[in-house]
Length: 336
Image (cartoon, rainbow, N blue to C red; front, side, top):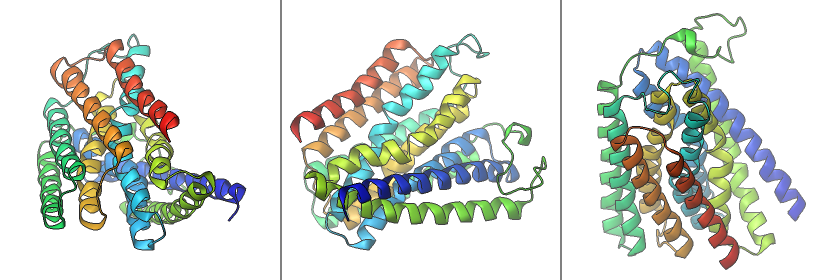
């Protein structure tokens, strides 16, 4: 495949992934309303997992496909998502809150389900740090498998706690019409909701397969490692666009949904994909992976201090999150 064909294939895979993620996000919002889940649960579980699916399936498809450089693509995608979520995604939601603070009922202060936010950030910090340390010190396989089991168990516990303590239920009137509901009724049927979620998931799987093929071919043409490209491109193209939802939710003062969409994805990406990487890849992190992991932990720590402890959005924190992401891009561009 030529360089031009690889680029076009990569762009096409982005389009498929984003279309599937858009459909899935819309579907899970309706699913959450049908199941009468709290906004904290919808944001931190359904919406977060929905938007994380494209990024999560990329490493799985890469390993199952067995292409050359698959381990690097998988590792880059696994670490790239938490890094982007703890930096650029925070810039999105914090920037929206500050820009539209006069429009928001609560101004720059947070209106969140405090227990959900604290649980999300705490689980992310603990789980991601654990998986990261195992990669930095090149842990043996038995220890990595044990770590993977711990991470999966942690996510199961997290889901149970979030479902039980998920906050108030979101009203159906506040959700955009279901895309698969041709009648555009106020209350689509559960079958239509499930059908849309299934079709969206199939689109995401197909897009992830095409993405892995295009990325490995493009890396070969460009003379760079697939890990570097997947660290930067995979989360930026598959995870960040869906976090635009958080921008609009924050603008309207729906901080529980806005932050839950991000912090819930941080929890998911620091447990299930990292567990997959521990069990099914070499998980021997190179310098780029280590820098991205350290910056992700720094961004998460800043979120704990500003959002969980101080309970408000401030300009210097938004600038700091932006600088964390920019520093990695500069590092990669000057050393690769």
